Image (cartoon, rainbow over all chains, first blue to last red; front, side, top):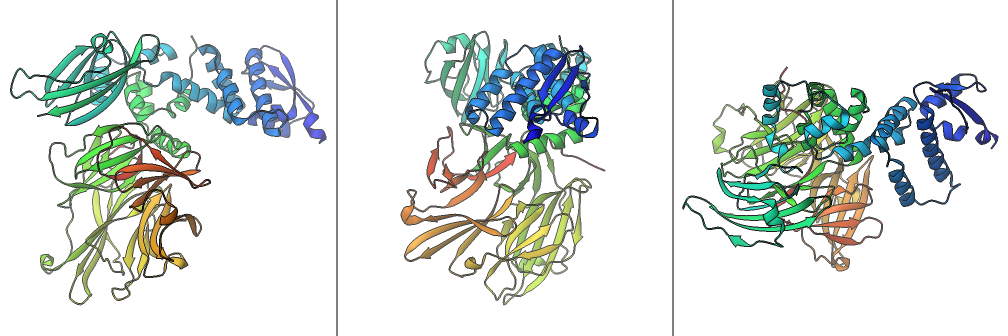
Length: 246
Length: 358
């Protein structure tokens, strides 16, 4: 199979030249197209990719080509772990990899890198997203408040300081959340606040199983049980089970 | 600090849950427009369907209590507040499509509901165009809910048949509701026999399916399909081996395919066969009571696993199991907070909006 030992030359934006096997380089649909429609001996310019990034990308392509061709003895689980380690880079590099994977049209790498960023931002608040992506908040205070209000339930139970509200308590409710010990939890049933507690107090108990005596006969009584576990760096996962008596 | 152009951000947003996306509308105005954009909504939906993520089970307990279970993790339940809110009237799920649920109450009032965005819409009612006072005659009403990709419209079908004496029928009419125009219109009458009081159709492959009778005398069930695009009916033949009258048959939609559950007795053993319709009928599973550790309660297939090698079943309306298609082994699924009994459907969490008008 003579074609697999063909080499292709790639020149990056910072004038570095890489010589790679054709099978590795054509993992990029862009390079494949240029190679098949241009002059096979000339150097292909990848203008928008720097040497460092291309070097990493070629490592990725080589690993995947070798594993698919059986040249390397690596199980799907091991490849998955290799991929997970591959994306353990600083954010700038990760973003550069996304841009390069898009420009070079390497679908599996684009999928891997985008999924990595998606996993990073799951459950975050808008302020944190703006910092991560360096985005300017172009809302007025009123406009942002209006958008927030429209979907306010989507803001419940996030990691962060503040009051976490558990609403819409009906007779049997289970909910789980991750929060830090500086937060408070506020439970609302039938439009009345039935419990306000700081998380640190809950966090010290293994489980609480008590019917609260209502001050007012119309206040619903709740029986709560809380289980907690540490999920690292000051955050705990709380699992609530409420039984409500109206 | 690095910045990503908006089109790359879209690639990332595609992979997020609806709850995250609704929150991220607050990040900036361009992000808000991107998330609201109908093309993004479709891309997000098709990515969820393709990767089998963002799916949830919806459980209906005791007439009007709804719970959802995240299909990716299958660990805990979460209570859902349905649009009728405080009203404690019995509601059923008529159909689900692309993240929209169609709900119907005992009075025939229909709601569309997206539990992921928590938006809902009541459908306008529509009359039965039959001159004689039809209240004196028994009638059958069959419904179905689906999507027509060409006009990008959600449609609800209602078939009504008023029965007369001696297995005859006095009146048949079919109407289609379009979400885009928020109105009903009558379509060509159908020519088969509806045997039950009320049935809901199953959506597979851009068509809705019901079990009907070709003629009232025949007694043999047939499957009729309604193409959501052409709005025409056609019959689908049952697998040959199911034509026996001794078979008790139920229909479902699973993994986008039409699915048939045939229960019968063979050589003194109870058997359940599960068929799915791809190009033609394929028998997916054959379960014998003697071999099954479950006894033989009601089994309802719900969905394939992400890798496609297992099927999730709801057993006797109160628990779930995975059935491995290769090893034929059954594995219990423990979900915290399951109500004691329930009806269940699978839906995909999507941003599909309601109140869409031309």
